[in-house]
Image 1 (cartoon, rainbow, N blue to C red):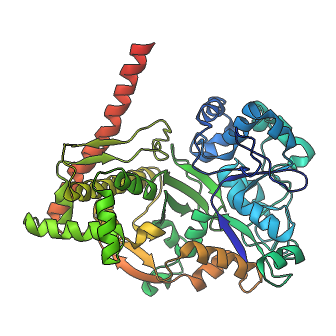
Image 2 (cartoon, rainbow, N blue to C red):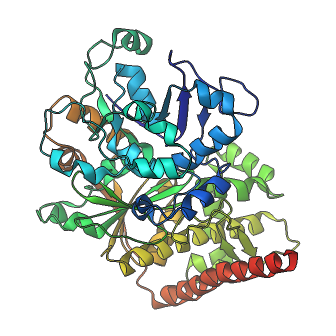
Image 3 (spheres, rainbow, N blue to C red):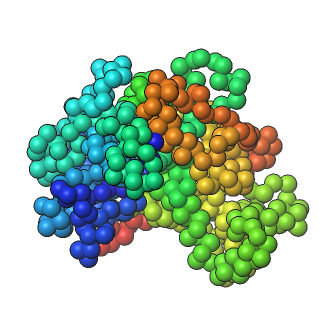
Amino acid sequence: MGFAATCSLVAVDSDSSPVSVSWSGDSRRNVIVWMDHRAVEQAERINSSKSPVLEYCGGAVSPEMEPPKLLWVKENLQESWSMVFRWMDLSDWLSYRATGDDTRSLCTTVCKWTYLGHAHMQHVNDKESRDMEACGWDDDFWEEIGLGDLIEGHHAKIGRSVAFPGHPLGSGLTPTAAKELGLVPGIPVGTSLIDAHAGGVGVIESVPPSEAEEHDMEAICNRMVLVCGTSTCHMAVSRSKLFIPGVWGPFWSAMVPEYWLTEGGQSATGALLDHIIENHAASARLANQAATQKISLFELLNKMLETMIVELNLSFIAALTEDVHVLPDFHGNRSPIADPKAKGVIYGLTLDTSDKQLALLYLATVQGIAYGTRHIVEHCNAHGHKINTLLACGGLSKNPIFMQEHADIIGCPIILPRESESVLLGAAILGAVATRKYHSLSEAMKALNAAGQVIHPSKDPKVKKYHDAKYKIFRGLYEQQFSYRSTMAQALS
């Protein structure tokens, strides 16, 4: 077995009972969900420390990472803070529940806790090592930000031992966990991955056979994986470490062993599309229509857009949004601007509340999300990456218009994996490595990843010209917003 879960923060006491992280004091509320932005102020203070560890997360921690959340709990819920015996990332907590082994994952600790994974470079060939002493914590950082108490007991509360994803934990599934799950005790359990990173493991080697035959260690470095669901994570790897302002990483061995991971992201993509649709006057009416036709609301909107281009005699679907532009930063900008205070913008609103107007707003939002991904890809390539192929998984990758707009806007082919549930495949790969069926995560990925459909960008020069113009407007929307924020800050100073 292997576990993959969101990078949410779990608080438990010495009996592994939940400890509240809520103002309500309700102990059932013992998880701070990954996208919780309560710790924006704490993140700003941590970033002002200019600690060397910040270089390894794009120059700044996000309020979605664990140190700001931990600091928030210490400052606001002192009683809970004193009761917590273990702070864990959700996937590590699930692995611990299954095995009783407190070993943390290089994926979770490096990507979300400022753990310096490259401290383990000398252990990379130590295949038998079951748990490795945590040698990548920077104690000066924790002291400096006011969380020095987490250093106590060799970092007992945050992770005394850290292992590569897929490493077998403890003696496998404990009798108690086996009974709870209806499984057999002793089943090997591999050290965990964050869900998006499991998606990366489940998809990054899903290339057509002609490309897979090139045993070039650099070929994987030309790919970026989009794990697109509620949010979108943008995963790319490199042989050497690349420091990219505003983009998380470089994280050593946090996804693909012995490669440095660069992790871009958009905090709200699927969540933003849901928000745009659900808050429109036509939403309920269209939802009923979709239910009657036994199709999803997205399928209905896509069909409406296809009909509209015929009615308006347009040569390509994107041209419908000539007058509507969306900046999708409704939950801040994770990458590449790294501004959690950024806001969303919709340009081109009218009094129209028709079904067609919702279809246009939906399409413009899809395009805004794709322009955000283009911004991330261009920014990464400007800082040393050579990304020329995208691979996509997650719920949004099943939406053909979402995928085609991304291909057209970024100008890269997008490969969809044969196995659409790539996050589950990534978790299964952890189990396969833990059983020793494969010697390494890399070997398992090559054996179990496979390409499905390939979506190519449009060859029509008019499509490129159109998107280049809209992308310029997209970039301008943030620059204007930043200027307006400065104007208002001065007015209130």
